[in-house]
Image 1 (cartoon, rainbow, N blue to C red):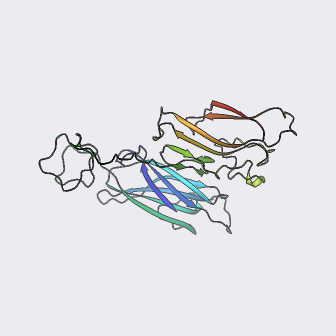
Image 2 (tube, rainbow, N blue to C red):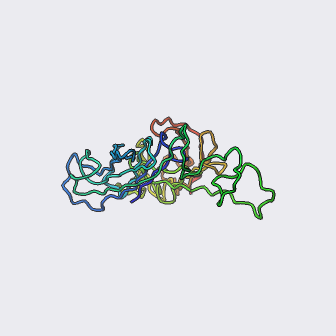
Image 3 (cartoon, rainbow, N blue to C red):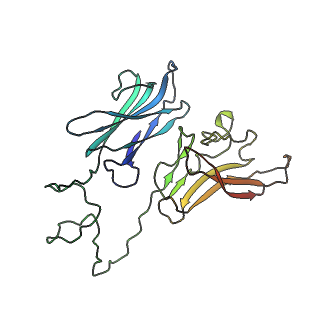
Length: 305
């Protein structure tokens, strides 16, 4: 449904730097096919750089989708090679794990390309023609002839007269999480000032396959399960999680963040053996999702009802 390529550092995509690919795919709603042990719902990622007429696809990685989800969000990461015009290809379908950039052996598949431009490192010898992209920094001294249109970067010195009205600060994008089947938990794909599960992504408690209302339960990267005794809207449940930067800017290393929770407390605890205890919430944090080391950062209590 969608392919997006962007730089990992949030700046211009430049040769030699890391880039990320995000691809939204949709799985079939009904599968009436012979299931083979070595067949998967799989997405293959390829990359091509148009350099000196050598158009050769380079394999990046493959991602697998679970058969019990309607849509999936695939990610891949690679280093941008030399070449101003580059392309990524996503091959997605149902078939064996091994396939080339042009599918011929699958019965069900979709292939899409995305072409994009990459900034090249500056050379020691300047070109005779102007570049098609503006430079990131202003020149050290002004030119003698004024330009016909505004420059891409502001001048170093203020104008002699103030503007009629102040400019508004830029509005940073809000990032809403999507379920990632490879980590089995919600993930926010963008660099942003906040990350939010929204009202429905984790609402409820207990797996839907076991009669509970929570989609993709338990929504934890390590398989830590919900209670099998909990009943939605009667017992404790987490309805929404939102994390945001305190300064309103993009969340960065060393910056302060705030976590907001929407929870349901127990309606009635008279039938419990520990009826006099409060509902307790414990907030943990891990800095690396691939190698989790949980740190307790906050505890709160709520009365039933």
